[in-house]
Length: 455
Ligand SMILES: Cc1cc2nc3c(=O)[nH]c(=O)nc-3n(C[C@H](O)[C@H](O)[C@H](O)COP(=O)(O)OP(=O)(O)OC[C@H]3O[C@@H](n4cnc5c(N)ncnc54)[C@H](O)[C@@H]3O)c2cc1C
Image 1: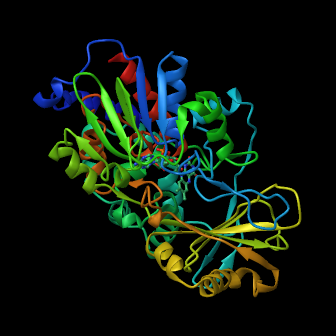
Image 2: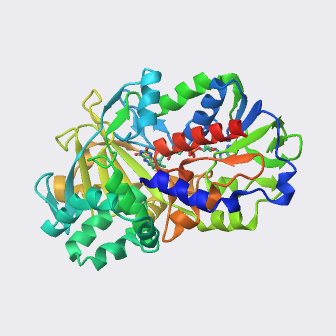
Image 3: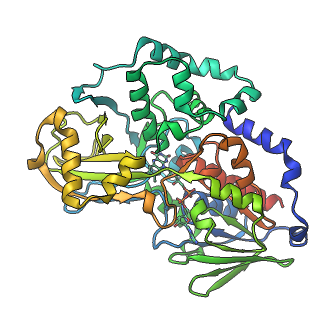
């Protein structure tokens, strides 16, 4: 049983909870769903809207930003030879079936975006292939998939009650192994592994592709998938710069009102916003206390991307990435295999490190990033052409990069957040088996589209 099957079984077991409350029973429709409002033009909302259009349902999609894509955000660095980098989602995983299928459908090319990791630890630079974990850690990692396949449901719930750092410490791994796991795994979860559910970490590592779903990227930028989906939904059905402020439902249907006073009505609604935005909407009738508690409990990871454009790719190999114990945290070559001499290294910092880098003046931030590279390449300031940043911890719509399921939250919080609120269904990365990925956003949008049509 993989994460999704297990979660669905758990939700079904508690299905009494999913029954509508009395006040909402009155607003549930008997008739076929002919029209649906979707909040959010990230991949989840776009995938939901596309699926609904294919089923002949009338769709109106409202997006607060002036662009589609949400946390998928391709960017052309200033004054470069047409290079493209990702300020949001970077990698498409080899197991991410829906992303891959949609790329095929829209004729988008996926290219290899795998890296071989270098390491800067304790002031020492070690090239890819010349550093490793201890033999014990290697052996533990190797047997994870087979062991995980045999772990009982009861044990999985128990593992969710512990954090990933504690779980590994109890196995007796030494300081270096623990430090390296913290540095590497916190890039996946976006926060220290002391704050991550052991269940969620084990499920991710035991069920992922060999390179941990860091396999491909879409040629021309990942945003091209969002653009293609938006074309398929129909641009006339998508309203950009429309921030939803209020959602009201009654016997006849659901009506939303945007900040500028415009309102739209339909039979049902799918809300795909991150929880920070969801909590700012005025829901009528109000969300139940259990949902509010779950919404307040879930935190999002603080990730900052701090790209630096260099006049030369002095790191030597296209598949360069480097984990460091410095403030810049993790570097990867953001323009791998793109033509030209210039290249972009992206400092990808998580948690407090991201907060600190974001808070610096541009000059001091650049200096901290360049200093982090010194053990490997010395002073590379002469190659700097420009820099930029995007800090997701302060993004006004998500207040974080993606949801971070902490201790006890995978089984206690997610099922509550997945429950409908009368005619309103919820979707988004935070509610998916492939949580934290584009694949999860698409899966959950498509599942919500299915559910609203089923009634
Ligand atoms: C730094 C970073 C790195 C990542 N790396 C990867 C990766 O390598 N691989 C991967 O697969 N995934 C990665 N992800 C995760 C991936 O980007 C997300 O899982 C996915 O894009 C989320 O899609 P979504 O539709 O659920 O949410 P979003 O993309 O956030 O879409 C929700 C939309 O709702 C809109 N909205 C919010 N409030 C309102 C309102 N009141 N009214 C109207 N609209 C509103 C928002 O503007 C947004 O466009 C990364 C994300 C970040 C930030």
